[in-house]
Every structure is written in C-alpha cells, then in structure tokens.
Image (cartoon, rainbow, N blue to C red; front, side, top):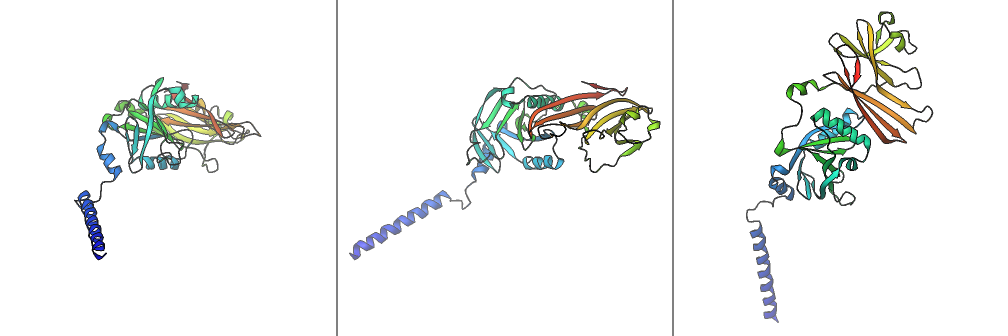
Length: 327
C-alpha cells in the first residue's frame, strides 16, 4: 500500500515537472506574448492600410461635434483585407465586399447629391454610377466589436468614405497617399473663407444709414435703419448679411453685395422655413459657406417629423461686377 502511494506521488511530480518545462519552452524569452492586435498591425501590407484624411459635416453640425469626431478617428489605422477589417486598438470583424450601384448604396437622393457635390468641390472628381462597398457582417449582433464605430463604407479612387454621427469621415489609402485635390494654386483658391451658424439670440449688428444706401428700404424689415453682419469683402465689393425677421420666421438671412452705396444682388443663404403653426410636420433649414474664390455653397435640409427627407446643395458665384449667379 505504501509502495503504491509512493508510486502515485512520483507520477504526479513527474507530470508537474513536465507541465512546467512545457510552459517555459512556450515562453522561453521570459517576455509576454505578443498582443494579437499588435501582431495584426505589424503584419498588414501598406496596400491594405487606410489612414484618416478629413471630416465633412452633413447639414448643420456644431463645430464642437465635428471636432469630437475628428479627434476620435484621426489617430486610428484601418486595415482592410478581402473579407476582414481591423481597426487599431479596437479589433477586427469580417466584412462583405463587392460592387454596388451608387444610388442603391446611398439610399437617399439627397445623399447622392451631397457626395456628388463633395467629390467635385473637394477632390475634383465625379461620383461614379457604381462603387466598391464594404459592410460589417456583424453589425446587428450584440457581440460586434466595431458596430459603434464602423458599419459600412464605399471606396472611390484612393478614398474611403463612411458616416459617423452626422459627419462623413474620409480615409486615404496609405499606398496611394497623394490626394486627388486641385493643383496647389487652385486648392488655395478654394479654402473656406466663411462658415458659421448665426445665433439669433446673440447678434451684434452693425448699422447702415438707409439714406446712404440705394435699395436699403427693401431690407429694413420694420426697422428705421439697416441692420447687418459684415462678411469678407471682395476687393471694393462689400458683402453683408441682413436679417429678415419681420414675418413668420425670426431666423432668416439674405446675403447682399454692395458697391458705391448701391445694392447689386441678393441671395437667401441661412435660416428656416416651416408651415406656420406646424413646425414639426415639415421644416427646411438652410446654411451656407463662402470659399476664397467667392463661390457660395448653400445647403437646404428638409425634415418631416424630425427625419431628413431631402438635401439640396447649390453653388453660386459672386462675380467681379457684384452679381450672384448660380453655377
């Protein structure tokens, strides 16, 4: 009986020694094993690597929100294989990948118009009828690692676009890192000169003496003098915003061009419109920006019961003569 017990103890000790030796062999360097995410990051070729390039708001978004989205994505690396996407420091998912009609992928006509305008203005390229898409297979699964970051995207040229919290994120393929933008001189012309949302509860208006400005009477809006917000001038052409808050809508602004104390042209550029008494049923919000070549871009977003149903983007140009013409 004692000999049998001694045999069992010897067998147990031998097994423990074997296990310990096996563990030491597996980690002979004494270093921790390489994290799976780190290994992934180091193993992908440059052709699969995508990095943050720029963000573009959809409709009226606060600057703070745009900045938050930018900060969230600007330091992330995306690695996209045939059937896999990996985002640095977050994880990986399997994906669907293929070709699709652009209108089918974007779903809404206003989003097709949005991307057409974006690609033309910012990248000097057209939105093709067909795009390459990638889609997270696990988006609808509670266990999905990336569903709160990435659901689907489309690729055109060396750019990848997807949406997050009302903002479009653009990634640039690392192996083709030269942007498709305008030449440097043209690009310089098309930077943003003015983009801001007016807070109607906190405006410091300037005053134009109505008798000193030909045509001012049409824009007084029940005031004795012309109230205005000054915008960047184009040479000796003065550009201002005037409120038209004397009707049903307190938030409406027109852009006027002025030379030699004469109003030359006007354009509705910012504000809201809705059916009086039923604001929630249908509402339109308009915003604008001015580029340094004095192109005006207006965006009108239509809402029904709080849901976006249409988005219209138009371009105008302020000529040297002061006339505003749609392009």
